[in-house]
Length: 323
Image (tube, rainbow, N blue to C red; front, top):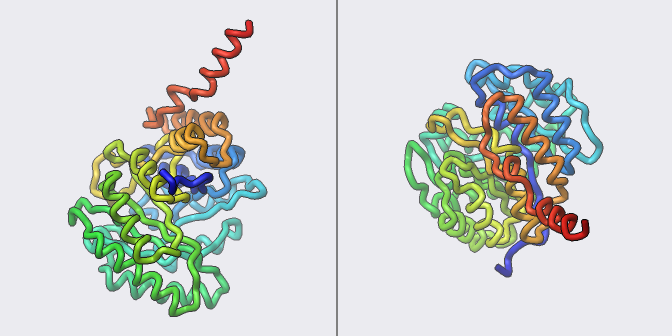
């Protein structure tokens, strides 16, 4: 337990993760409503949209409108996801997002084919080209990332050695361009991670690259999202992606009804009970979770939004004793 961080950093993925996979059309105004509400919770980084092909991901067809309509708060970074140069140019053109580059690879060739129509080798080549484009435009490259780092519905278990080798490929691309990455994100894109595999993969990467700060992007497909986050905390990981109310899922993951990221308010609740700071107002975040459920029009998997916090029960007992 000695590796437990005292504070974690959260990236809120709900607006992007959630609205890219919802079947029914969701009004742009309601997407903006959720982004604005999340902006008042203490979260300092919100991923609001994906700049992807609207024919393949109809839920992101209004990405520019969402960005244009949101009301940014000081101290909050608003970002978008892109997978290629066209998406990058769309994000830049909004003029309202924080634009920073990522060097992204995938541990599964089969998933890359479905997600981006590329092989691993083609993805690596494309990332080298993207880095050059970033540098030409003065865009800082701050992050490395790997999809399907813990397993794949199309290929099965991903060897830990492959993950470590691909981290090395990303770091090589960064070094070739005199870039020092702020952190590297390992994504459990299809929900294959378990607490044991989290510790094995994080441990192996940390052993090979002890100075590399790691982040985890976890999905709750098999109800292990929070357990995996706890395993990450035990390994000293202090950066996490999460989605309010448990929104979302990857449309190309091959899971019918694939779950979203680990639920933000559940993760915040767990950390607060463990004495780990998040900088987030949990009560306001729960209000956002209730709002998200209203927007999508069906139950969402978040637990704390339904069960409430222990602190409220503690306060109620104190009030009862003092009455």
